[in-house]
Image (cartoon, rainbow, N blue to C red):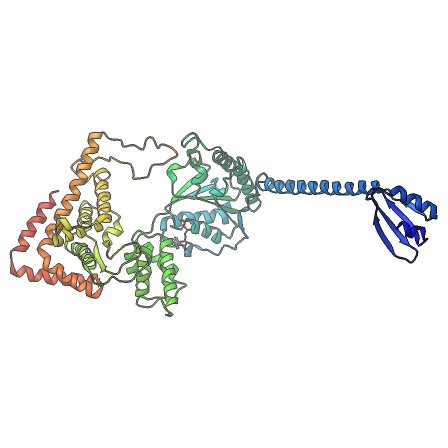
Length: 588
Ligand code: ADP
């Protein structure tokens, strides 16, 4: 390069001391970067000599500005991060502190499509609630004579009995907006949210009056205050206080009626129940037989039912079913009907749907084996006793078709219509149930002997224990006399008085209760064995038939048993011996 300078080929030089290089611009237009190490001075001198213009570049400024830019970028990045963080936490804060503004599911006026005719089987409750519709529609009728329109109505009843449906029907009939909220939606992790949600709900409702507010499961907030292990729950109590205040706060006859549903009225705070708050309390119970028939009819309206189906029969077959269970039964049947590509729901589909709901899914039948025979004897034991014992339920069918969950077969019974309708249970009826429940174990004892009995009767024994204990401690059906020794069977309530849930009787009485329960169970087993033992031949026939056909219906089963009894009557004195056994038991 030095040579090039000397030869005058170089047009311009630019020295960059920081990078220790020289940028050379040749006269012919080429450029080059030449590193210089210690010979900077030499280059300078030579350039000066040759008269080549030389400039020295000050890189420091450039380096400084580069550093500035990179630092600036870092700061910007940090700020952006911070802003992002702040925005996130602001969102969280507004979600909680702004109490996420309660969004009650508001339906526009008259848009609730449910009517009273859609709710069946709860006669009295419906009548009472019909009045609420009048309050909403023509309040003047009441205010003219100085009546104060109730502010709150509490619907009490087990789940699935149609409480929500009733509330919606009231709104539908009166053509007013319907605000609905589950009480658990009030309670949040943050104290004070529930209270402001209550305020918000009432504010919105008042703007839309007349209207209905429905709070489901009100026991979630309405529990007695100051209760629970380790003191109360602040958030819940504040929410409840707010609810109480709001109920006091809205003026009489403002047109807002609060409906609330619960299945635990016993745990509600007394302040909720005083007049001026929930003035009315309406119980919505499980439907009786006629009620069930009516509910089935309501749900059958929209489904094609075969002519052969008798809803009255199905009402008999479904004791203890709630409205929701019955709706589910018809729905399951409709699904099965669609799956089988039939055009209407028939008896057998309903039957399958019922078994699916009550017993679980059907699984493949067992092969004919020792196990199957044992199950058959067990079930025939139950079925035979249902037929033989006076006061027992009527046999509907006995089957060996297994169900998921380890059920090998079952004997299904239908309670007597009289028992069903009256709701009264006699001592004789309960004793008959004990004997029938022991039928499975008794059959195993008679056929296979004491050493060969199986655990298959575990479920039956539990049932026996439960019924026998209730007989002794609640109904006074034992030698201990007419004394209630237990509460109403409600579970320990971990909110108010779990310490008091211990028995109210002495240890000695406890021992006597146990002895009575044991005696009832033992007598039931003895009676079952006494009835089955002389009918061994009949049992064998029935078991063979059951194994061959898998299912026997109640009518056929009874026919076979009666035919056998007729035959026995003519022949031996065996029946007389049995009669002795039965009279001996009556005294118990
Ligand atoms: P709850 O609020 O008492 O738990 P729901 O009102 O939510 O019960 O009932 C659930 C469903 O069961 C309803 O949508 C309805 O289809 C059916 N149902 C319950 N009770 C009745 C009844 N009395 N009449 C007709 N249908 C009923």
